[in-house]
Amino acid sequence: MIISGSIKETREQVKEWKKQGLRVGFVPTMGYLHEGHQSLMEAAKKENDKVAVSIFVNPIQFGPNEDFASYPRDLEKDAALCERVGVDLIFHPEASEMYDEDFCTYVDMDGLTKELCGKSRPTHFRGVQTVVSKLFHIIPADRAYFGQKDAQQLAVIRKMVRDMSMDIEIIGCPIVREEDGLAKSSRNTYLSEEERRAALVLSRSLAEGKKLIQSGERDAGRIKACIMDVLKKEALARPDYVEIVDFADITPIEDISAAKNGEVLCAIAVYIGKTRLIDNFIWKY
Ligand code: PAF
Image (tube, rainbow, N blue to C red; front, side, top):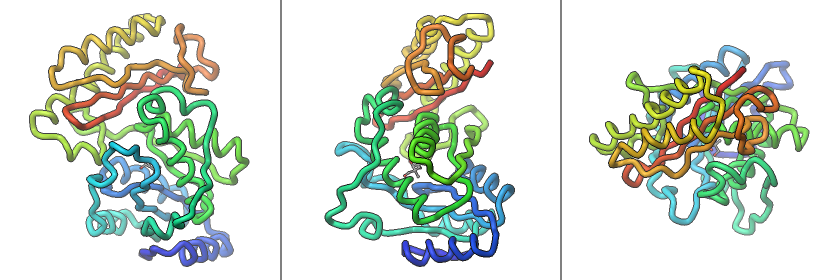
């Protein structure tokens, strides 16, 4: 397995694979890899001849009061997991390799990024789009793999690829959960034992919302209220948002049977203590 911090070396290696007619799968990550990332790498391994993973905690997608400095990092453990899964290349650049001191070019979007996480993290998606498009230039893969846990990010990347005519297929992979329902996240490591228990309210509240839909409810307001009621019962939880949007364009929807492509995203963000966690489900019909 190659581990490289160099844009030039990484690009040349991937180009060489492409020249040999090999299919390349790419998994962009910020490291501190868990079973969610593993499922993306395994999907990439199954569907391609070579797999590249990037490990880069991207400073420009964090707001000034967010957790960039404390975001967990463990390259040795990450590399061991990549090796076990059969990853061929890890791209692990320094921030200075990715961003020159006078860096001033960003990729931004009018729609999709204004709702949900975009409201409380106004510069987040600009940072994600910018780094992902840089990564797609450095690693010209055939397919890139993203988790549905960051459902808005997945929708934004898909739209960016379409709008910018990028030559890469975006594959969305299901959320991976702990046995008790908590969605896997690198940020779960911030939780104390008590907070870890309280965090179960995210998946529990979504399960109640889904049950209500299954019983025939189609009014987004009533479904959101049901989810909010469950969240409010947990003393350590402070909801940032509970939203139901059309998954096609991340716009609010009132009647969930009116989604453009028949896919509705029900998404929540909740502070448990100081840790902001997200979770969601997609309702398809
Ligand atoms: O989902 C993530 O880990 C990050 O947002 C990504 C896509 C690697 C960009 O930094």
